[in-house]
Every structure is written in C-alpha cells, then in structure tokens.
Amino acid sequence: METCEKKKTWTDEERSKLAAQLDAELSEYMKNLEKKEYTEGWPEDRWQEEMEKHPFFMKKAPEPGDELSPLMEGLQQLKYGEDENTPEELANNYKDDGNFNFKYKKYHLAIFSYTEGIKTKCNDKELMAQLYNNRAAAHFMLKNYRSSLNDCKLALNLKHEYPKALNRAATCSFHIRNYGECIELCDRLLHQTPTNREILKLRNDAVIAKGRLERDQRKQAKLEKALDKEGKKLLEAISKRSITILARKKQHKLELSDLEHENSNIQRVQLDENNRLLWPVLISYPERMQCDLVNKFHEDTPLMEQLIEIFKPLEWDKERKYIIGNVNVYFEGNEEPPVIHAVDIRLTLGEILQDERFVVRNGAPMFFILVKSSQVEEHFLRECVN
View: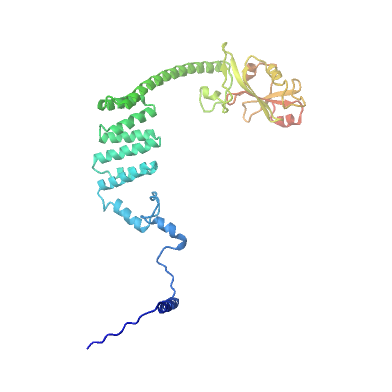
C-alpha cells in the first residue's frame, strides 16, 4: 500500500531566506574556484586591430603586398589559386576585383586587378577584350591617355567592332592631338551608329583641330626657316669680323648655340637693319661685386660713350668713384691660363672685339671696371696683367 508524503507549504519569508542562502553558497563557491587567465582570445590592447584582420569584419580590402591573416590567405587561395581555378575563372575573379575598385574610384588598384586578369592569358577572347577595355577605362580616368589608347587597340584586336573601346580610343586620340586617327575611329563608330551625336561632335571638333594644328605647323616651319636663314646670316657676319667665340663643343664651325647665354634674360647677339651687330655686354665691378647688363650694345659705339651713360649715376656708388677718368677697364684674354688686358675705352666695341686676344664667352662680351690705383685693382692685376 502506497503512502503519500504531505507537501510542505512555503511562506514568502521562507522562500526569501532560502534564496539568500543559495546566493551566499554560490558566491562562496565562485570565490574558491582556481583563477586562470584566458589566453585563447584577442589581447585587450589589440582587439580592434585583430578584428580588422578578420575577413568578416575588415573595413577595407588588403592592398597588394600587405601581410595577410591565415584565414584571409586561405580565402585568397580559394579565389586566386591556380590549382583551385581555371584561367577563365581567375580572369573573371580579377575582373570583378577591378570593377569593384573602379566603382569606388580606386583606379590604380583597378589597373592592378585588370593586369593580373590579363596575365592569365585565358582563351576567352571576349573576356580578355573586356579586361583590356576596362583597364583602358581606368587609365582614362587617371588621364593616362596614351596608355588608355594602347589598351583600347589591344581590345579591338580581340573584338574588332567593340563600341566602348572604339569610343574611348577616339576620345584618347583627340586628347593626344592625333586628330587624323580620331577622325578614322569616329568614322568606324558612325558606320555602326550614323546618328550618334556625341561622336558626330567629336569628329567635327577633330576636323577643326586638325586644320588648326596643320596651319600652326606650317607657320612654325616657315618661322624656323626664316630663323635658320637669319641665324646663318648672323654667323657669317661674326666670322667676317674675325671675332673669337668660345665654342661649347669641339667643332670646326661656329654654331648658334655658342652665342646663347646660360641666363635666359640675356638676349643673343642680333643684326640690325643695317647688318650691324648688337651685343649683350656685361659690365662687372669686382670691388663692389656688382654687374650691369647692356642688352643691345651697338658695335659702332665707343666703349667710353656707353660707360658715360652707365655711370650717370650708379645707384650704389655713393662716393662717386666710378666716373670716366677715375677707372680702368680690362678684359680676360684667350690665353691659357687667361691673362687680363687693359682696354682703350676710346675704341668702339667692334674694334675691341676684333682684338685677337679677346674671346667672347657664353655669347656675351665682358669687361671689368676697377678704380685706378686702388688696392682691389692692384690685387686683381697682380701677376696677370699684360
């Protein structure tokens, strides 16, 4: 015969007391547990860095050459491994990467991805044409118009009437001023779509630009021919005067480049309407470390006359030392080592330049002005005056 135990009826006070006792026992148990440091997770000071390495949480794709986490390396191998993918699959994967980077305006990365796809040399001509065309688009956005044009041509070799490649190739040709090629490419496009307004406008712009460029080229050729004739005339005039010019290169004949000064502000010697020479002349004042430039010193003008013009007055010559009668003028001769020679300032520039000892360096005759009997003059001339 079965007996039933009578269930205890708990009061609220008893329940609260029991709950408090259980909490106390649990707390005591937890205190007595052995404390161990958890080492299998991410370090607290680097959790964010580690999290961003995880493929599911990273905020940006790895750049070429970046160190990859083992998980990412595994995923990369699945996507890009040659053992796991056919050349066509690899090319498509790289094309997708390039398209993603292009969408977010990362054109250099897009070029890298498309290039990797091209390297697969897959047998799908359509896909290869797309890769070349897409790389051309990325180059175009970077204004690499020649590279873009080259890729368009490679795409057209694989797909002869590729509208996107033809369109971009025509635009690139215009940008690099190859207007003839631009017109030919526009004609190929217009054969497909005769009413394409954009291409019609591009072709018209190319025709106008081509005409303008050819006109400018004719003008330039005419100008160069005139300059060449003028240059020959100038060289002949100098040779007839037996003026010694220091040549920049070892050569038998005088060249126009020998008359060009390194300073672009110093004009080249010219011929006037009477076929007389106008020289750029440098006047140096060693004592004051100053220099004057006479851009068009007529060869028939006496040096004294030009100096009088220069000396009235010199802004920095507060003591008025530099006046005719109180200075001596010298030039550096063509001897080795160079020797300093005194100048008779009553002579014209042309007469001075015809002195067999005078040499024109850098296309500009140079004279040194020194105060008579000064210590600077004595120092300057010691052992070198003739």
